[in-house]
Length: 399
Image (cartoon, rainbow, N blue to C red; front, side):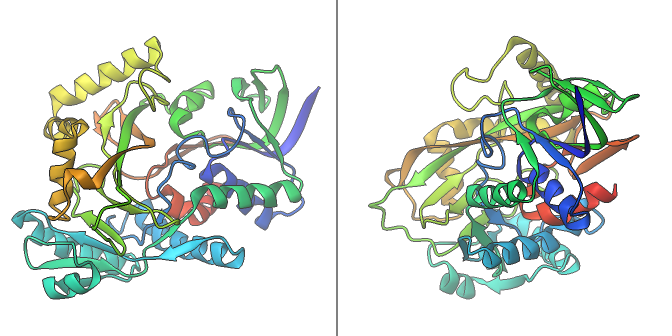
């Protein structure tokens, strides 16, 4: 039999769970089904997230990221405090690491102000008081005092608990294999059939492939980038109070290697943005298949040759960071006193599911949502998607 639901959500990451949560807030009596291909939540992007609640500094004011980041941060902060989930307001400094970054400091400050973020331009003296280990090339830096860190897995678990208590059905180890848009039905790998009034695709690293099952997003493909980290040795005398980021290359959708403070107080450095050859290629050759690897290699080569958005130079810069010595050099631009002995190899690793517009040959910089008939497809939901999840969910449902 084909069971009917008012809303079917594909993917139980932070975006999918937030969409289901918002739908219940809007319509408490609706029937909702969430389909998740893994055995539990948090196996991929959302669960491997650093937990930083960004304040909305980086993004042009006319972008979706700018519209949802600051509000999303406030909503997520309130949610964590309401439910006694751990949250650490540690603040963040953004440092110019070369002289040309001075103009970018002013640009980011103006963006932050327009986007509703609390942000200040501070002097080297003020920086020394906030982060004694940090240094800036141009005697000034940006300071975001409200930037916080949460435990992403505890957030996911709490939302899941609330949804199940409200009667939402979550099916694990199940994924869509085929769809019939005319009858609004889908069939899964377990031969289960479901009908929907509306369906939202929030499948992250697989969003492009799933959207194509519905005939949507044909010109897009996911390029996965692997984020590797080093940890701060427990015997290190380097102490960081909050988060330390470089002024990023605004032509690329990555923020550069930075410090990460987890909710338990431990400190990591990363992530890299190294092309991966599988959407779930976290270690070695795991998560790599020939079809995916061939497609990814083709588009990576095409981007490299075309060099749009400075892709070639960025690749040269990032690929060297697989070596500890080069990784260390990047960190020393932020924390000059750090040495190789302070860094330990970490098992922390993530995959950034970066969308590529194959027609334009460009990495998609903003969130991207496409609706066709009664299906909505979240095609690009990278950082700050975790921060923005609650505000972004409203947009997805309105879309």
